[in-house]
Amino acid sequence: MPTTKKESLQFGLLMCFGMVLVMTMYNFFLNGTFGHMTLIEGILDFLMGFIIAFILDWFLVGPLAKKIALQLTANTTKKIYTVLTISICMVIGMAFFMSIYGMIMSNLKNGFDSNTVITDYLSVYGKNIIVALPLQLIIMGPIVRYIFTKYIKSDKNKYGNIHSIS
Image (cartoon, rainbow, N blue to C red; front, top):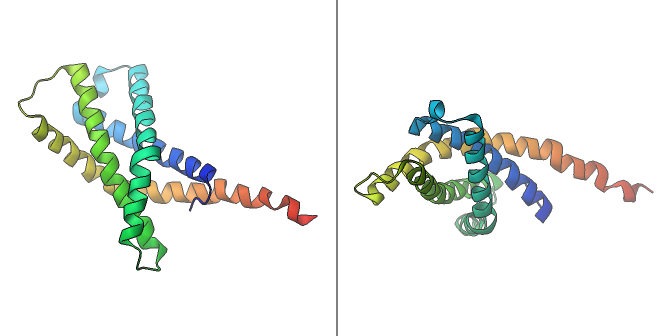
């Protein structure tokens, strides 16, 4: 897919935007906050989550997920196995960290009212991973790869060969 740093940035922004948007709305639904927040509060929550998720994706989870996935698929020649393994590793890592972020934000807004942080975290992580994994593999991954190859990667090919024509 992405072959340059710029393409990786563009691909990451698209994927992060889509995943954070859907997961933010899902978590609003889970927490019962749809009817109890303004549109501006929702947008600000989304933007904060997007920024945190993109930083995690770009600097920590993404590089680690790719490293692990490439080691796990080193003996295969099928690119789809590598793509799926990277996606699964990304979801596991992002759900891990974004569930922590979500718990922190929820506790800051609503106050801390639980007996065990670990049990609450495992519950949040479980609810997030069961939606994020199929969302990534079945919906968002294919959509973002299509948009990327159709509109971003193809633009490079269209305009990148201008100098070779003359």
